Length: 83
Length: 106
Image (cartoon, rainbow over the protein chains, first blue to last red):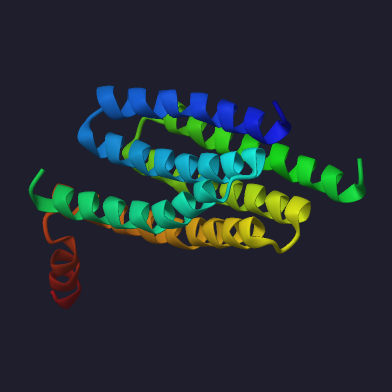
């Protein structure tokens, strides 16, 4: 296990508190938690790509990073009035 | 270990610590506006890790795309935070900008 895979594992465990906050806190707090978790997940995909020397992981990160922005903005817009 | 690998390792550790700090801040803070600040911190951690990958790989396909992802996360983080905070304010106070305009006119 190289240092990139270790870092990916550590950040993977760091997703657990984000999930706990998203599940237990009110919805607005959950959205903040979701946004931090999406940044973490993009980073984990980068680390896995470097650790395994597999390009598909970095392609996933390239797609996921802008999509997380779109998702976050959509939830923010929905929470403004409807949720 | 070459100097490039050492720099990459230092950047990797710094980025990882910054990301863990963001998660810690998310858990410790109680106000939602305080919690939103840590999205930007996590973005900078991702950028540091992307630069670490570039130091290790040079400008290869993985390095270029990692730099792209890191830049996207740093640039879009504040946009997302500002938009989210604005929508929370709208939810709490209604059309608060119109109220400010009315109070300035009177």
